[in-house]
Structure formats: structure tokens, C-alpha cells
Amino acid sequence: MAIKKIELLKWFASNEEMMEVLTAVATDLGDVIEDVNSLVVIPLKGAMTNEVFQINWPTKSDGHLRRVLVRLYGEGVEVFFNREVEIQTFECMSRHGHGPRLLGRFPTGRVEEFIHARTLSAVDLRDPAISALIATKMRDFHNLHMPGAKKAQLWQRMRNWVNHAKSLCSPKDAKNFGLDKLDAEINILEVLLSEGYEEIGFCHNDLQYGNIMIDEETRSITLIDYEYASYNPIAYDLANHFCEMTANYHSDNPHVLDYSKYPGLDERQRFIHNYLSSQGKKPSNIEVEQLVTAAEKYTLANHLFWGLWGVISSYVNTIDFDYKEYARQRFQQYWLKKPTLLDSSRIISQDGNVNNIS
Image 1 (cartoon, rainbow, N blue to C red):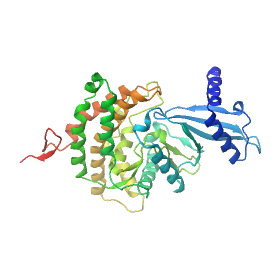
Image 2 (image 1 turned 90 degrees about the vertical axis):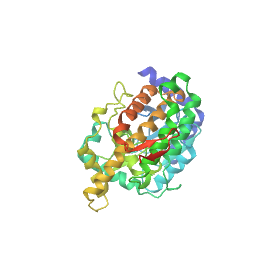
Image 3 (image 1 turned 90 degrees about the horizontal axis):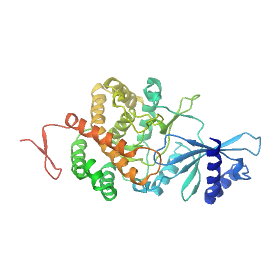
Image 4 (image 1 turned 180 degrees about the vertical axis):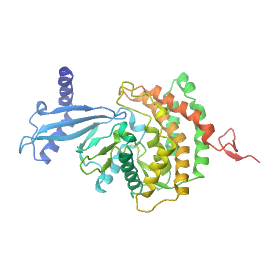
């Protein structure tokens, strides 16, 4: 472990642009970084798009530790989102009082304020009290007024990802993952899901437990990491959160999803009741059931979205994670659940158009 720490410090020291930014950040905070040996570098586990580190150094005033977070961008991830747009979202969120402040930027990453709160664990998502706090925070997040067209972004994003996956994949992988079928599947989902509950909000789109923090004293929730955030149907974001309850990214096999842990109907109803109640108006049973049903159908879009993400990541990202196996599980779940979640009274043409059975 000591060798790894020494190697990590050497790597930080060799990244001159990052060290210049860290030094400038320290100066802005009233501190001095004399050399890289005064830094304590702690890798933070669980990130699958970027590499994230907690950086500590002694403050100039009293010798206590200053903490910041350094985010190193994953290789090839620009296909998933526009980095400049993501930075704008990050800064806009900060102005709204959400999330950490941006302290500095360098070409391959950035320095962020370190939030003095605890990152949730997989178990925390099932705690009814914490779950209710998350539901309330999600509602607040969805009501944010952010730049950009207030319309669903996920359909075109997935179409772009299909094209990119096809350009990267070997013929064997393209066949195994069924990439040639996915344009038609996206068309089907866009038509059928858009006919139901379609409230659009500003969605996080990646509500796994590692992107949710809690202040133990105030019990306030903070959502972090906005790379995938955009306007989308709120039912899609709720579905994403429910799907993430099947994951434990800190296990020995972080890519393995356990669908026996997918929340049951009572748990989903309770979450959505808390979500809809968060602004002081008690929802009707019909309103709750309508959104529960919509969220369940939007799990299909989530499986395709993150399946494609896994396929592309397996070719472009060097983080130690079995992206292909993760993708395989998401696509498998899509084909397993599609017959029960989509309206069987509709027929699908070869080009993905949807028609009623006469």
C-alpha cells in the first residue's frame, strides 16, 4: 500500500497542470502547498466514468487538514456528454445552492469543494427514513430551472450511442449485444412511453447511491455528479433510482446486478408518495399509481441506456470494471421485462413504428 501511495504522489507531481491548479486553489483558500509531499492523496472507490481522489493538505492557519476533491476525467467519455455543458450545469447547480463549488479546472479534470457529508451506501437506499429524504430531494431537483430545451433528451442521446457503439464494436460484440435491433427498440419505447405520464423535469439520470450524500447532523441530502443530467421525463429518473437499488459498486464484483433487490411494489409506492407529497400537497392514490406505472415502464429505457453505456465504456474506459458483463445484464433485463411492461395490444412494424391492432 505504501508503494502505491508513493507512485500516486509521483503521478500527481508529474501532472504539472493539475499541480498548478491545486497550488492556486490552496492560495485562494489562504494556504500554501510547498511540494507534492505535503499532499495526502486518497482514491475514492465506486466511480465508473471518472477517477476521483480526496486531496488533503495542512492549512496554513492552524495545521488542520484542508480537503478538496480532484476529479480526473475518464478516457473517451466525451461520447456520453458534452463536457462544457456538464461544467455549465455544475456551475449552475452551485449557484442554486446544490452540490459542491467548482474550485479549479485543468485539461484532464477539475478540483471541487469537498462536501463534509457521508456518501450513501447500497444499504442506505433501503432505509425508509433516508429514502424519504431522497424522494423529497429528487422532487426539488426536478423542479430546477436550468438552461436547455425542456424536452426529453434521452431518446436522441441513445440513438447517438447506438451509432457510436456500432462504430466501436467488433462484429461478434455487435451481434451478441443485438445492436442492430436497438434503433427499432428505441423508436418503440419513445412512442409507447411518451403516450402515458410525461411530466418533464431536470433529471439527474444517474441516481446510484454513490451520487447521493447525507449530512448526518442536518439530515440534508445532496446530489452530486451531473455528467448525465438533462431534461427528461421524471418517471425515467425515478426508474433509474429504482434500478440502481440492484447494484453494489463496492462489492468484490461491482459489475454484478442483483435483481432480487429491485424494490417491490410497496416500496416503490411509498417512495413515489413521498416524492409527490414533498411540496405539501397530498397526492391521490390515482396520482401515485399513475407515476408508479410510468416509472416501471421507464425501467426499459434505463436498461437500454446503461446497456449502451456499458458497451461503449468497455472500448473507451480503462477503469477496472467489467463493462461488457454489466451491459449484458442490462440488455438481458430489457428483453426479459419488455413483454410484461409494454402494451401487448400494439403491433410493431419492421421499422419500429407502432400501430393499434384493429
